[in-house]
Image 1: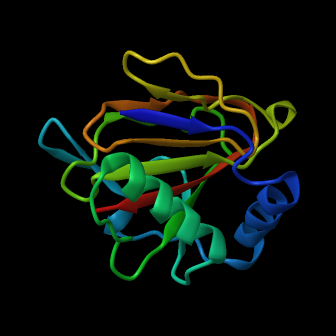
Image 2 (image 1 turned 60 degrees about the vertical axis):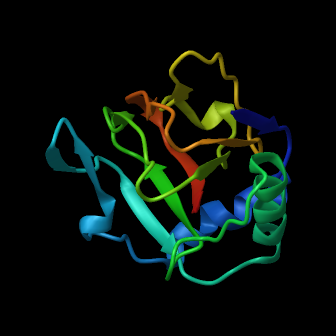
Image 3 (image 1 turned 180 degrees about the vertical axis):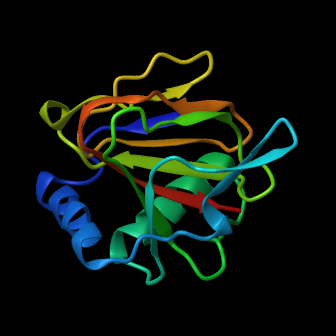
Length: 161
C-alpha cells in the first residue's frame, strides 16, 4: 500500500525541520547502516535522529493505524530521522525495511528549486513529491533515493511497527 498526502506539513513546518539540522548532531552510528545483499554498508548521507515526540507525529501514527488497520508504534528511542543529502552523488540504494518497520513515512522538506536529483522512488510507483508532501508505504516495498545532482535535499523519515 502507498498513500500520499499533499501538503501534510506547511512550508513553515518544513523550514523548522530543515533548520533543526543546524542544531542537531549528525548521527554517525551503525543505525545509519544499510544491509543489502547480505552486506552492511554505511549510508551515504547526513542523518539526524529526532528523539522527542512532536504533535504532528500523533497524526502520522493515527493515519498509519487507520490505513494499515493495526496498532503501531514509533521505534524505541527515536521518533524520526532527517535525511540530508548535501554532496553530489549522495543517494540511497534500493532497499526495504521490513525488519525495523511495518509502515514507513517520508516527508519531503525541501522545495524543488533547492536541489536536483535525490528523488524518492518506490519500485513500480510513479511519484512526484512536493515540499511538505508525505508518503506512507509498506516497509517491505523496495525504494531508493537517486543520487543528488545539485543543491541540498532534506526529508523527514519515520518508521512505525
